[in-house]
Image (cartoon, rainbow, N blue to C red; front, side, top):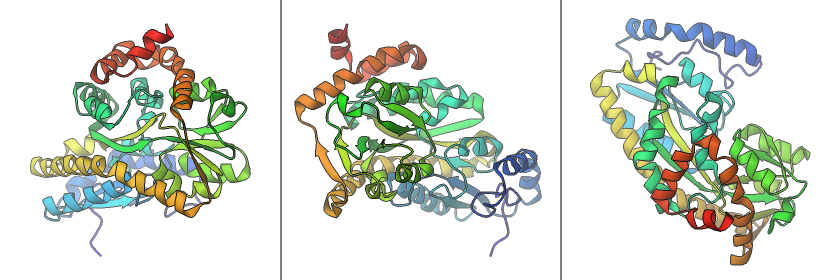
Length: 362
């Protein structure tokens, strides 16, 4: 087996190898070890550069498959000078811890959901969480591939993070142990959500109680009855076995779940120029791949959920969808100050989405 490489940080404990250690001990070790990165790089410059890519979903989700595609491209285009280690399913860090681990240098690459940047003070990324802000993938692409998307990625730089692109998972569906067709059906339910004030407001607008918890904790919480339901693209619903704890899945397409592909800035800027160029190229192609397969993977997951028959899939009528949109539209205005009115207006201009409903809502 080859020796550890620069940035491999094998002296840093992780959940996969030292699960008995407390989170406090792990955090303390990370803080102590992170400053050693430059020394390790110079001391072992002849070794392959190890890039740890951590994520919280299954390998056969859109993100999991794109991470593997990046690994293959990166190792090929650097001719083995970079070795990429992909760690799925919260193997190293949960989604509560992974951003801190990236900033400290314990991992080099992540693809967290955009909602995860709010705790860093980057509330504008929660604009992606607004209900019905994107009508379809074409509208979404005009934002993520355009100036608005680039502006958002640049906002990561002061946090020691380089943004390389946006990866799709897909549009989210609502689930619970009861049919969810109209807003009144959500009243009194406790719904697991990501740490996004926008998503919390969305659930409250439906009369539900939002409860923030790590993705890896959602299924156990549903099984124990600590929460009643959640929202997910169908690929996550299937691969994490939500169909074993949720009897109903409603195809609402109410919100978008996407990721930002990011790297530790100190690591990235310290790479040899040719290596960085090769990895940048691999990231760009992996991004295209991620966004090409997302809809297909979710469609296949939906077909499998229906085939298995453990969860009843409900499709909204046009009237029901319109009423749900109407119930959720006030969240746009409520969260305007948080995500930035100028940013929201820029998205409306790019997509045409929301303008008519904004006028109708007064």
